[in-house]
Amino acid sequence: MYSPYGGIEFLRSFFKHRHLDQEYFSSKLSLDDTSTNRIVSQPSIKEIESLQSEIPEHLGVERLLVFIPKLQSFVFTTPDVGIPLSMPALEAGDIDSHDFLQSLLAKAHGGLPLHAERLLNKLVQRFEVTKKIYPQYQEGIWKPLGDPNNPFLYVLFSLVLSQKFVATKNFKYFNSLLKVNDILCSIRSDLSFDSASNLGALLSLLREELFVLQLLKKQGLLYASK
Image (cartoon, rainbow, N blue to C red; front, side):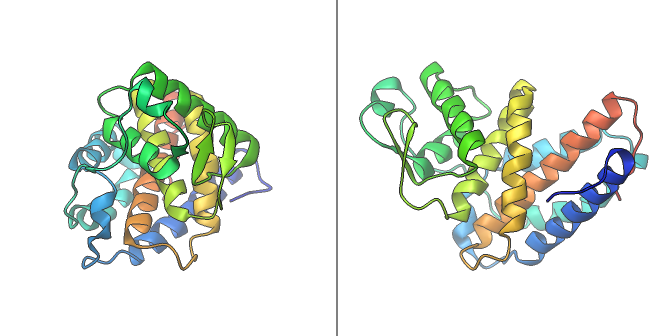
């Protein structure tokens, strides 16, 4: 999502397009699709609610409340998949992006081993250069392998970035998050988006909006996003 505007006009354009994307992903959720078990744990919803409570109502955050019941309609489970995040396991061969990101997502609230943190940062650097997430990476994330067109990998990466920004307040994660979410919104009609992908994209877009509102509040800019 790109805008020719600056200042308040940019914010208006940004929120307008992001709200349409949020509503699109919400409309595609299916309560009968058990694939959503793959995505996030219940604390992620509580995290949104706690972030929400930090923003004054007049900033428009009440608009986000309409999505919370739909998100809570799903049964969330901590993913029992992935790879060990120890150094020997990560150095044993090629990195499978799906398993690596799922493991990071499951551990995001509890801190990461140093080697896993370094590999994540390499993945962020690689994404900033290519704007793609590949299924596998060889030799410590640097050599990409496979077709970078799986939407779910971008959803997982987006969720990991959003949780890392919550944990660290490091703006490199926020900057990459904005770019990944731009990609997700640009490919939202892709037929390979299942309910897990739609749910994850919606969750990440809600977090992103709350982050932006928090930053505006910190700068003393009382802008209503609705």
